[in-house]
Amino acid sequence: MGDVRKRPRLLLHVCCAPCATAVIERLQLDYDLVLLWYNPNITDPAEHEKRLQEARRYAEGLGLPLSAPPQAPEAWQAAVCGLEAEPEGGLRCDVCFGLRLRAAAKAARELGIARFTTTLSISPHKSFEKIRAAGKAAGDETGEEFLALDFKKQAGFQRSTQLAAEHDLYRQDYCGCEYSKREAEARRTRSTRR
Picture 1 (cartoon, one colour):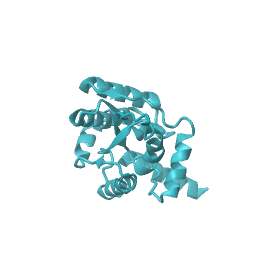
Picture 2 (picture 1 turned 180 degrees about the vertical axis):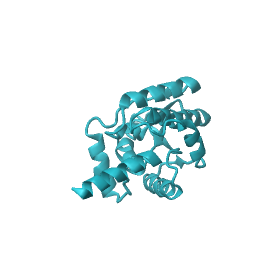
Picture 3 (picture 1 turned 135 degrees about the vertical axis):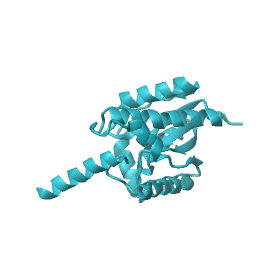
């Protein structure tokens, strides 16, 4: 008989289907993945639903389970209250990472999964150090281990854009919150004026 080892389970917080592609590709080699969609920062219901459906479609195509607790934008809005003027990548993002990764850590604990991680670190616009700090704090609260991996390394982001195109996935140009959406719209306006 060949060497059959049981792979450990890992809960993967998914921020969107395109970012999940390359992350899943890497992690599937060593882990049995359970996906979690928890993104209350996406306060536009239509945008939230569009991104969730793309994540579901991709997960189903791979035969991976994806759970999605009810949308709770009011929790995100309460958490970032007073941080509206923060720039993208500032303190508001730190709070957002913490909120989402605490939910991931709690879901991992409820499912009996010892480790969790997130697709957030694949973005070149997100600070790995901030994500790692938020993940570690969330894990410390629940006793789950945050697997701190910077997925943008080894051309992870480039691979995610390639896979997203191959799978015809909806790819947004902002993280999801209303503030990043405004910044993206301002960038588009500036570029069309040139």
